[in-house]
Image (cartoon, rainbow, N blue to C red):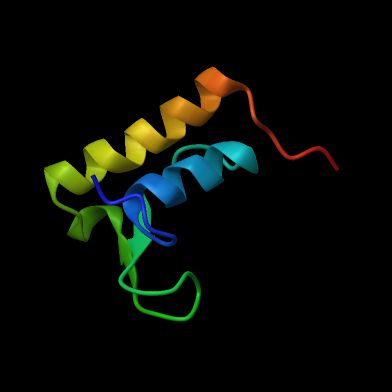
Length: 66
């Protein structure tokens, strides 16, 4: 599983943390400083990693408080 910063798992976790809802995506390199890959261009494995990151954070209840 790709848990690096900007990877599918990380982006799923971040979307949950910031309560953005499920919007599968990841970055090829550094977050916001490299190519963004959208859901339609992700493999099934990458989509599963994104969902796992999102679900793991939801289960942990780790959210950003403003």
